[in-house]
Amino acid sequence: MQTNQVPHYDDSVNPTACCPKFNPDGWDGAELHFENKPFLRAQTRSAMHIPLNIGKVFARVDAHMKDAGGWDTSNMIILSRDISPWKSEHFFSTDETVADEEMTTLTGDFVTKVFEGPYKDARHWIEEMRKIAAERGKEPKEIFFFYTTCPKCAKHYGKNYVVGVVQI
Figure 1 (tube, one colour):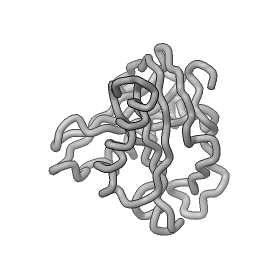
Figure 2 (spheres, helix red, strand yellow):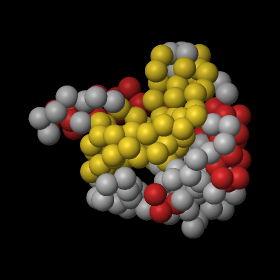
Figure 3 (cartoon, helix red, strand yellow):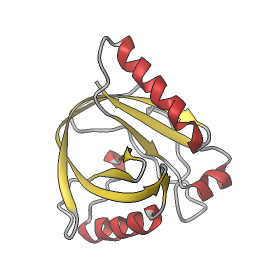
Figure 4 (tube, one colour):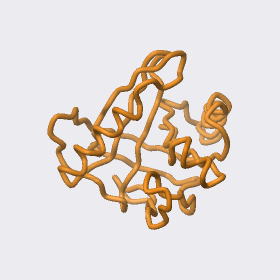
């Protein structure tokens, strides 16, 4: 994978008019190399890891990203992680500066793993991501998840794909 690129996010099938049906081709086992890759960073509130205001925050970010021309499905990923039981942070890839939002960059090497199942399995997926790093002789630095669809759309599609992303 080229520096600062991610697998193609195919948004061509979207019968829900919300989240496109995720096509996992090319996402499992991808090696990502970021060097000052630009991201928009947003935080959400949680109660014991259950998101409280994620819909409101994602809608705000989506509107700001669209206004800035910041969505690029050929290079799109949203990395999410819990930073405490009460707060999560989300990194939206973009090549544009987005007004009224916090911009940041990420640098490092990452490996992906596609999971399918309920969100409650995330604790098991974290352990699997740690194993993937260990198999490469590395200590995991950060573990993120790319939640490819909201719960409503996952139910509609009958699949809940989540991409684990471990920094090695």
